[in-house]
Amino acid sequence: MNQQTTMTVLYDGGCPLCSREINHYRRIAGELPIEWIDVTWSEADLGRFDLGREEALQLFHVVDANGVMQVGAQAFIALWAVLPGYRWLAKLCRGLGVAPLLEFIYVRFAGWHYRRRCPEGACGISPKNPKT
Image (cartoon, rainbow, N blue to C red; front, side, top):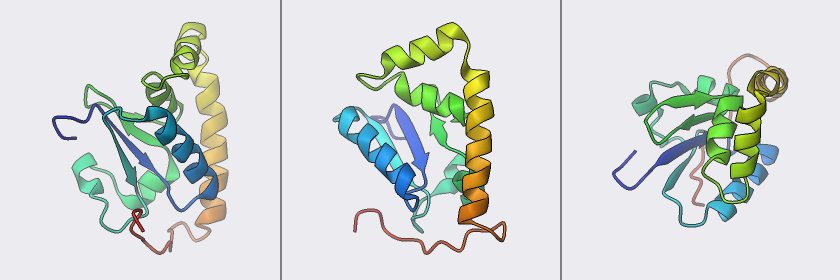
């Protein structure tokens, strides 16, 4: 993250569902200092996060403003906490302590999605530049 960035979001830009959701968040985020990294892009520097491409594709990752890597449901909650219109959802999730339930559901969905997308256990996704 650079001096201006307060959060980094690592997402699967090759997944239509994931891309729609991230594009929605990006519109809402507007000018917030969030770095959005499509992990399917061959130029994505995942090494700076000590993260491999396959690992990044398996679960949603966010590096929060404190430089802490959040994964899975906690990553969504961290992102929601900074987005206008979603802050209430993050507060609700934290206040009600539903993160473990969300994690349980998300991990199963993400596992199913990864196995479907990468059936041999390694994604042969053709890396692309997200700006094209």
